[in-house]
Length: 364
Ligand SMILES: [Zn+2]
Image (cartoon, rainbow, N blue to C red; front, top):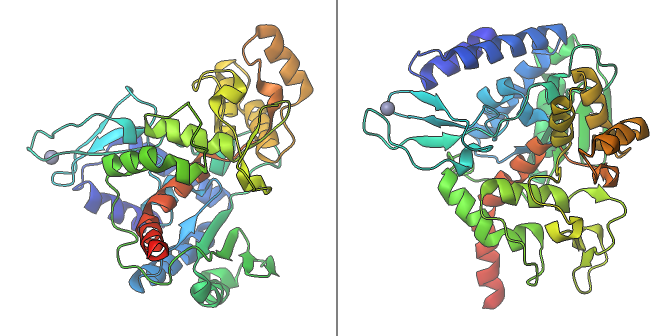
């Protein structure tokens, strides 16, 4: 697995090893070994190669995009590194601390004259691999959604893969979902059956502009919502807030005639706090608790409480309340992984061509 990983990295960066990236890859390879997941990674990697060869779209969710190894292998779409510029021509990589998401970086040209790509969503490996000293939280799950027409092929591929044979299989089938060890294959009716353009690289500006412009559709927001995001980070925050569960927030807006959870939308005004203060993903809870000097294992445990719908423990809330550091914190019951939010937005961007087609059809 290490060989495959370094071959891919060497060709991407013209054999120039960045020490930060190398350190993270080496640490994640260690975690891969510790968790005895090499067989699963190999099986997923080969399945993804098969799907790509056939131009079959797929997407991932959960915390999979926090894992750099899965990104390098082409399993996830969101680059988990810190915000950075990347030159396709000479392989130069340059990290930046000016923004919290690489899609919000300003334009920059490389020394070689080429316009640099902007990427990096700053997704911590701990949210996938776990934190030393914590107990029983990390699931290391790799969920992969494929079109319905590819579901049985993908299932068979994993079941019959040589690297999966020796593993004590934990197999379950639930309708159009199948799990084998940590791999979860589900069918997704929104994905097109075939699309040769699906995995084409994403232009950060184009995606940011599309999402800001179209965020009302993406988030199902009402026309009257006054708070508008102006950056990728802003769209991402709104997406997280909208997909989360909260208590004690009274002025929940409902789209006319829609009674499902999907129709319930929060705006930042609902919270009465600024975009930067409100956590919209459980990763934010982890980051905030680390800033408040909680040990990483405790921060991870509390973030997991919010991930799995239990809310933050009362003892922690009392401490935070006394410090006046997180006055709203008791409201967050269940928050998504930020990795999932980014993967979903990338997916929405990739599906935009099909939305456009539908609109044209319905207006005829
Ligand atoms: Zn260059």
